[in-house]
Length: 337
Ligand SMILES: NC(=O)c1ccc[n+]([C@@H]2O[C@H](COP(=O)([O-])OP(=O)(O)OC[C@H]3O[C@@H](n4cnc5c(N)ncnc54)[C@H](O)[C@@H]3O)[C@@H](O)[C@H]2O)c1
Image 1: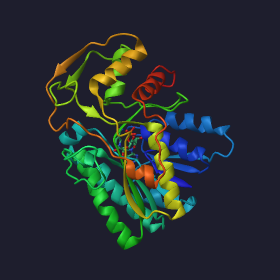
Image 2 (image 1 turned 120 degrees about the vertical axis):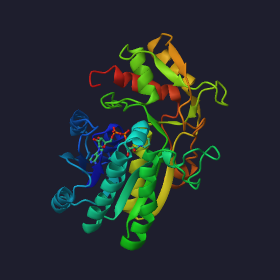
Image 3 (image 1 turned 45 degrees about the vertical axis):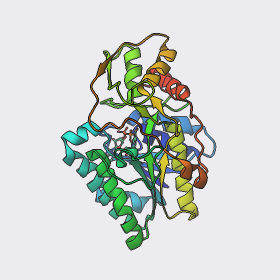
């Protein structure tokens, strides 16, 4: 059985679906602080008829709750953990650093210690491009210096810097996955991105197109990019999920002990291109405002995912921005949203 923390969240629900569909039993541990119980129920129903799929269970609680982890590990044969549980609002992290250090860093240390006590020695860790800060060059390679410019990135970087020590002292085998901009929704249209506080560009523009939000603002149109707006690397959430499966399998097979991978498409798309892609979906022109730049926003963030492609044999199935946006559009217009 695989323990998946944060499995009721946006990316976590797609990861759970991918792992369980591949035959692994899954125990989700999620406190539902930003996650969605319904997503878990949908996955359980979706996989009920799929032959060879593993079983999915949900425990509601904190990933740092040592007594709860003791219970889970005593009652279930946990082979490995995939740790996605975290808060991930960059702006909020700068206003309330303690919330991020406590949840993303302290809770993760407690989780690592519980896993260690129960001899669970394989971990896939959700990290982020935010650990890099202002890139010195694009595309960004994994050995780029880690200089986060926000507390969220710092809270993740601190865990990344501890993992090698957990390997040396306690034999933890781990893979850190640094995602760039996760986007899109599962092909079934049954699970997708639904944050209570939405801050991601694609859902914000879609919600505007659906009349569920007022005008939106582009933060800066005077960057040194072709159309003046920031360039980002969007990666389909189902492609991220597939990378988690490949990482898990590499750890279970013992072919990988300690590695870090970037996960992105390696293709830059501007804010204006994203708006155009949503306009294709909704068939109307969307009005927006131009505001000042946000401090700390790099003009370009682009991943080199060559290492994941070569070593994990990972190949994104949905690299086209329009396909990513179309899948998000379908999800937002579904009855499950
Ligand atoms: N969305 C992105 O573009 C992106 C990019 C890079 C990295 N990430 C990372 O991916 C992971 C998932 O992000 P997401 O966008 O799906 O966010 P999300 O908020 O949808 O999912 C996070 C999940 O973790 C749960 N959770 C939070 N703290 C917990 C705790 N202490 N104990 C148990 N459960 C807890 C929440 O209830 C939620 O279900 C996070 O670690 C995030 O930092 C996301």
